[in-house]
Length: 125
Image 1 (cartoon, helix red, strand yellow):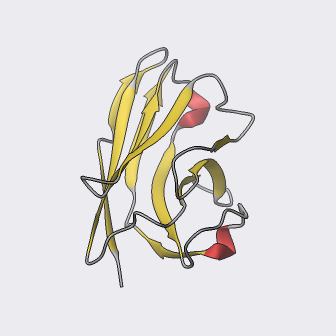
Image 2 (image 1 turned 120 degrees about the vertical axis):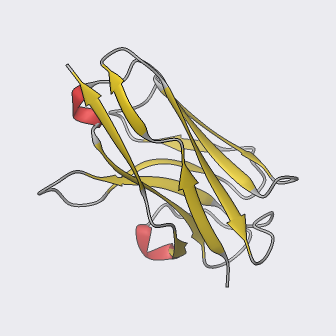
């Protein structure tokens, strides 16, 4: 079983940037797709960004496309989310997740078997 730990969240003004990290331990995530999700108070969890097991394909929610960049460093067993031009509506708890099976990307949150505890991102106006 893989354990995930997010870091890098915090308070930032609108227009600012943050870089989230997701460090995996317990086993390598090298062959597994990974993703970022977020949940704001009173709202359902939503997909933010995903990256294929090879790192060759990335996927973004329309709301973050052009502002956020997902990447992975399998040598460090770590995934990142660079968030630029942040908006107040980006305020949420951000969670990273790893697919439960290797060599696939289907994009459904049901496919992700391991989740981190989350890191809070707050964007002030």
